[in-house]
Image 1 (cartoon, rainbow, N blue to C red):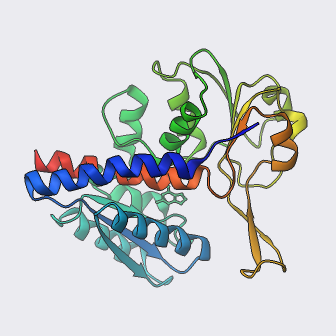
Image 2: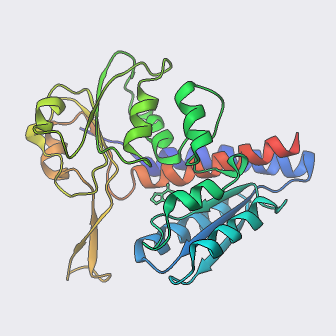
Length: 290
Ligand code: GUN
């Protein structure tokens, strides 16, 4: 079994991104800028936003963090997004999800200018992705494709099973895997699938993004399968100074005995999500600088 080291791949790509940022500054005088909006203080979201900010700084990008109280109204949030749409220093806008329940995700996403939508969440970018137009690809799905390739697997002709149908991961990763470039045969399983194991036992690639520990266990895998674990679940753990530990959606212990390659949690998908976000922000700044 091979561990797919997301930190290693992220590190090498971030080196390329930092070089791109330096080049853009030198040639065009443009510094890529990312604005990250966080509403409320969900601990997982705070930690993601902190990691995104640090990654921006390391790549030489400008990052602007906007922390808003949990009581912020939808109208106020939409107004902040629109200010950033008009701000020439900002090339990428990200609203960390989930937002508090009284705010509709859709209303916020729809407010982001598609040319600054470096998450790839707006209907325009989702539509472009589906028809194969140039667009910002959603960060986690794009990172997942890179991780599968990095594992050494040739995706073409393989059977990929995706577990979970979220707009952020499941649906877009299924769409990307089925594109001509990757040419996988894709099965999308979800909470309405009576026997997920029936499908995963035939899979060469399993992407698990269900948001629930132990969704995938070793007995559900074919020998040698590549497993990409997107889950980030906090499990209470008294022995850990933080009071919790992170586990994925796959049972690592049993899956790692059958899989040919598997991503760890943490250190697999997470670093790649952030890397593809930096990639899109650099691309956005390059378009403006042309
Ligand atoms: N919440 C979990 N993943 C993501 C992501 O990729 N982008 C945003 N904006 N929020 C998230």
